[in-house]
Image (cartoon, rainbow, N blue to C red; front, top):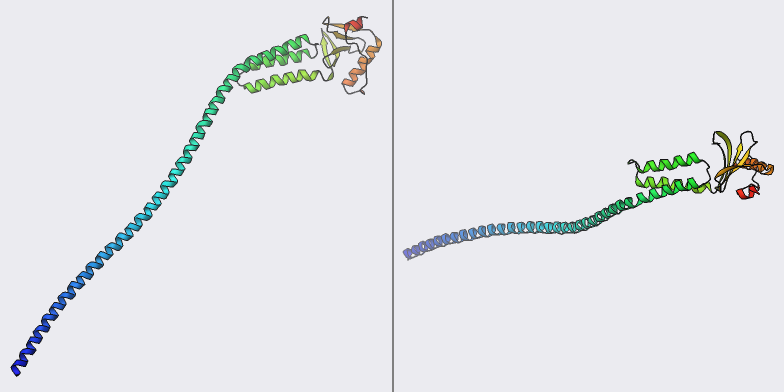
Length: 249
């Protein structure tokens, strides 16, 4: 009986030892499996982080690409606009060159018209007006004067001539070798008065010569008109000879 009990205890001990050994092995396997799973999980987590990082980078690059495309589209519009503007400028330059070619003969013709006007007009301020035309002719050959400036001074000369028709003026000028007081009434009449106030006359447009005035009333009116022109007398109506035919009668 005792022996049988001992055998049972020994068997139980052996069985317990064997079970413990198997349990340890199972625990080791489980532990290794857990470690392996943790390792895999870490790799999965790391892969997920990498995926998210790559996805964020993709979104950033994609946004940059869209912005770059929009910028390129806008840049193409700007370049196209600049090309159109450049073409317009080139056309304007061509037009300007063509205008210069056309305007030069026009300026020559305008200066020629001024010369003809002065030659056919009453000879007031003759030297001053002829010198003005000479300066205009000289300016056409000067490279340092721009075309628009040349045209401007020609127009200014025309304006000066035009304004003569609306004004009266008294000044001193020589007729031959003798100095006289000259009275200009617009462009229609030109009179002289000797400096000693004794001799008077007017320019006869028909004969293109100076003609003496002997009528005392006309002389008196010329004296008054000269004072008015010099702003030394009050404006009044005066009877002055204009045409040679009237003077001859």
